[in-house]
Image 1 (cartoon, rainbow, N blue to C red):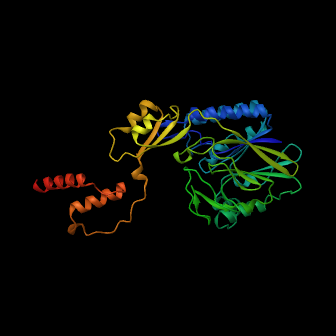
Image 2 (tube, rainbow, N blue to C red):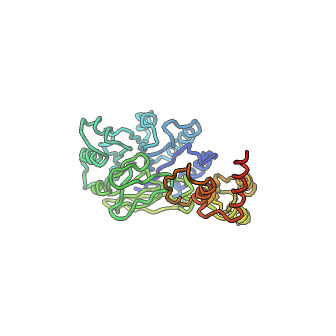
Image 3 (cartoon, rainbow, N blue to C red):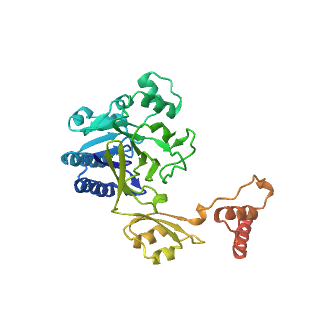
Length: 374
């Protein structure tokens, strides 16, 4: 069995002022072409189908189009809900879809029974869950996500003689090394703290599966020999500008699951450009990209975004590199007994990482003197 693993579509997401619907449609059309070219048997959608629990009309239209085209290809489709999805909304029409080999699981009690794919492969679907969901479904008292997932997995009665594959949408830490996250997620710790609003668990929990197709983390990576994040289909943050995006193709044979990747091509790339505004405007940059510009100019530039958009019509964000640097430790001061000039100088240093020049000190002194006179 050969399967396309997709995750974190985030349909309806915006990048600053820009709707990404056209960009998402462009990538999903590539996915459909890949299924036809590679003669794949199934497609996994591993959560975060939508960017919001209340998706826009254009997002639901795109999802409807994509499902209809997958169905027309005659493949089986396996879908789980992610932390951005509304489980109830995604559950709508489940019985009808099931009859057409589109398998949707959004509730933990539905995850216990696998669906056969071919003669030997069993597909389990574990949607995004919190311990509360598990305790309510099974009248248990799991404390934390790890205990909750152990509870669910223990109820699955996995036949290890079969080839077992699990879809899951959680923050899963690798056996060794760190979990690599994109700018769209916040990683706090490995001990049950939140990644986005998903508590983290260890990859060892899934040792009984031959492969775990994961969603939630946007950077494609393996977290164990048997577990892989496919990553998001687009770059959804400026921190991902240097990342590559790819499709993951799973090849499942009897007790042997491998994967390969194919690159994703973008309608509009996301790029981060650094330098003075003049340097960025003179650079041979991608005029079709969503440009995030980090300016090295020492003084403020008048309306830099307008200037950027003349050359880069999809410019999305601009800021100054001095704002990105860490601020020095600030001490509490008795401002009534500190000169205004000193306060202004300290503030300038904290914001810009360098002291006022002699000329600037003269200007500040003059302006403060004028204020005192008035």
